[in-house]
Length: 249
Image (cartoon, rainbow, N blue to C red; front, side, top):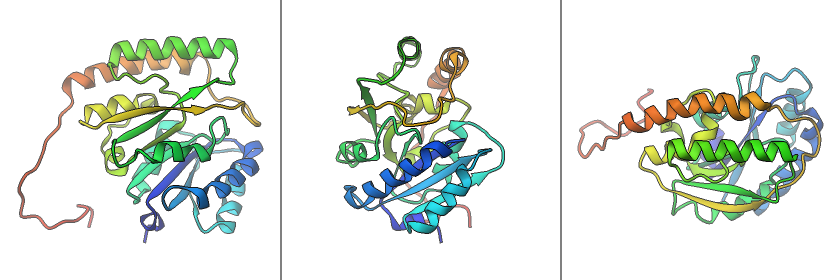
C-alpha cells in the first residue's frame, strides 16, 4: 500500500546535495506537520545526491512516521524529481518546497486554505533574499515567459505550490517543466491563485542554478510551451461502462 493515500496533502521535497541543509529542513518539516491545515506527509526525492543527503533522509524517515522517500542514482533535475513525486503520490493534494529553506513549510497553510477553490495555489516571494544579479535574471525570465505563455504567473520560480494531485499527474512533463506549472495547469482547464509568501536567505549550501538554466534554457522551453498551448488537447468523458480503477491493474 502506498502510505501517502492515508494523507490529504503530500509535500514533495527535491533534494540534490543538500547535506548542509538537511538537519534544519527536517526539523522545520517535523515542526510544521502537526500544525498543517490538513493531514500532511513529506516525500523526499533524492535526485542522485553524491553527498550524505540520502543517508540523512533515510535517518529522518526512520524517526518520523510521516516522512517517506524516493531515490535514484543519477541526477536528473528538479522537473524529473517533481514528476517522480507526483507519480508516487496518492493523497488528494500535492505540493512542493525546495530544500534550501528560502521558503518555509509553515507558509503552506497560507496556500492550503484555498486548496478546494483552485486547481493550483502558488506562492509569490516577498522581499527576496537574493543577489541583485539573480533578481534581475529572474525578473527578465519571468517577464519573457509571461509574454510567451500568457499564464499570468508572477513568480514561477517560487518553490511553494499546492495543487490537486490528479491535475499534477495529467501535466505534460519535460526538462524545465517546473517553471511552467501554472501555464500547464491552465492548459488543462484548471484554475490558479497566487498569494504572497515570505522569502528568506538560504540557510546553507549553494544554489544549483546558473545564467544558463535561469535564462537560456527557459527561453528554449518557452518555445515548446508556446507550441503546446496552441495544440494542447482536452477531452471530457460523459459516459462509459468501464468500472472505476486506475487502469494499471
